[in-house]
Image (cartoon, rainbow, N blue to C red; front, side, top):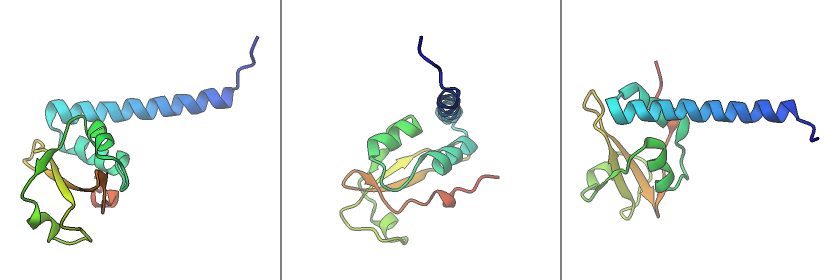
Length: 117
């Protein structure tokens, strides 16, 4: 009989619990357009360097490509003219979030911009 490593089991349980939490917030954003759920995802699940497909998976939906995004790139940050912007939202309060991707990878993203109450 194999020996069970209780430390390994508890570690996998924590990962499972964190995934369950992420899924809960993802569902709240998708179904209710809950702004706090969107903020939680942005703060806890996204980071610069993520592929766009992974960002879309975390948010539970595809972003809307922003063909005319010059205004976004001019607002600050070190964006290139070839970077692409995608929009998620609006949430229940009418806010949309725009994320910038370079070669399909999230750039100039700071989770600290989404402070939770």
